[in-house]
Length: 72
Image 1 (cartoon, helix red, strand yellow):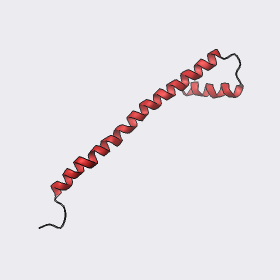
Image 2: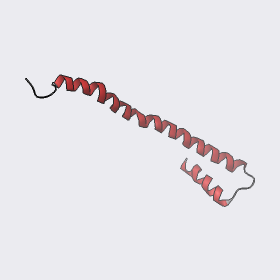
Image 3: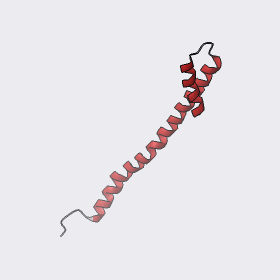
Image 4: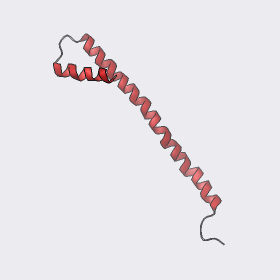
């Protein structure tokens, strides 16, 4: 007679409930990193487009957009 849960039950519960959550948490940053790279690329391309085609632009906006290009 034991005082707690059997070792096999603990291992089964761990592998069925905890391990899938760990795997999901490990995959989450990879998904968001791909999205972040896409947003960053879009921001850089937009900055290039505005700087190439703008007729009038303030120095503040130009520096802001140039910082995006430098980041890229």
